[in-house]
Length: 252
Image 1 (cartoon, one colour):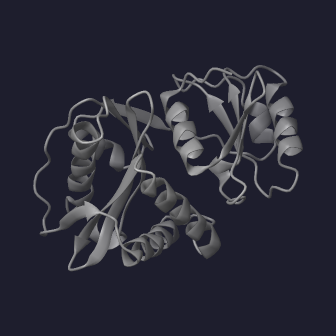
Image 2 (cartoon, rainbow, N blue to C red; image 1 turned 60 degrees about the vertical axis):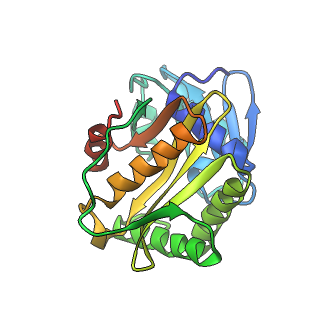
């Protein structure tokens, strides 16, 4: 299956570098992350769009067969324009349908300075990564995610990120205030010159202070100048606050 969505293309690239299994079954992909079975978007089926009558029922059956032990259902729809077709059957099955916006930039506009003097640097120590784990759980709890208190899930995501960073294909950065991690993100370089941002998050008590803008800019410059990326890719909730921040930096 040829993937047309830049979002899913770069998602799959990152997952492959993390060690996930991607099986091409001709008209769909099956993505597995055996070490992280509760990671929805590491264990899913990717299908082409648009969905026609009966397609949703078919793909639900494909997912059930591929992930017999899963306690979740995750089906990605490969659409570049947000038009996914007939989703009534997905709603009838109790699923929700979400669309994300993918933005790109080949250069960045420098943001204003953060309100506080922050140290922006790569994550290097055990304590740095321990702080990423705590920050991820805190942000998930603040946003009301169902896996907020699932420490095993968060440990798996941090371990995958750390392994990827160790390969040299990606780097994870943090914004620290007095030694405390307040914002973090990852940037992963892929073979086609695309560099995908991952897991952009900021402590709820330190938002709207310019930390995330400064960190995205610093990491993006690293990708363009040091990693040799030709284009930066970032995904956002079209109705969330982060998309305005990304656009202010030059993402379109």
